[in-house]
Image 1 (cartoon, one colour):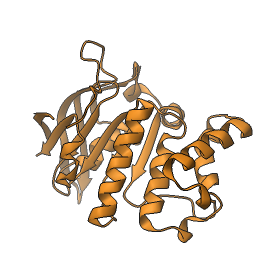
Image 2: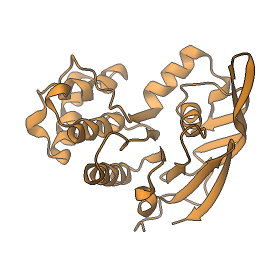
Image 3: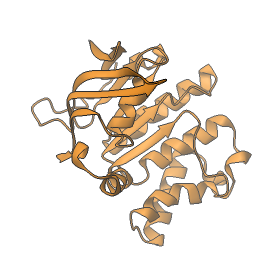
Length: 238
């Protein structure tokens, strides 16, 4: 059970999806992955999406993270109709407003830890001094100051994912998307990463949407949704 209310109930939703749909073609046959999703997410909420492999969790996250375009429906994030943006403007929107945490970490192997964390800030136009201060602060909070000049292959899996969490938050995004963030970790390390996501997003006041097959997240979620046959079912608030 969370100790703070992460969403202002009376305010307009940060994320608003209406009749959101997505299909794919395989062997000339269409396959509906999302069938008219309606979803509101308030600023500051931690929303967990459960579902079996292939249920559409990642497809929904790709739409919410503005990495893919819906076949039909409307999607607004922070007042912007992202379904109306062309590819260039979607890329700019992602860079500024979205932070991602992936199962496979996705750290750049040729950059140090500090350089991996600095990159989103540099892409958003931060000066070197501001970026260095922000990176140092996050590494200190993670207890990984001594790893600043290490390369990803010199880190444990848990350390890499902790850095990936920090990278998702370093540019203070509007929305954080986490897709199976503990999938490559053992149970204890996975719990630590989930707690880190919860703690850092709450401290930063960020909104987090996480897809997972793990029930370990139940205790930290504000809302739990299950995706079944391309539709979302709400299990209620924790």
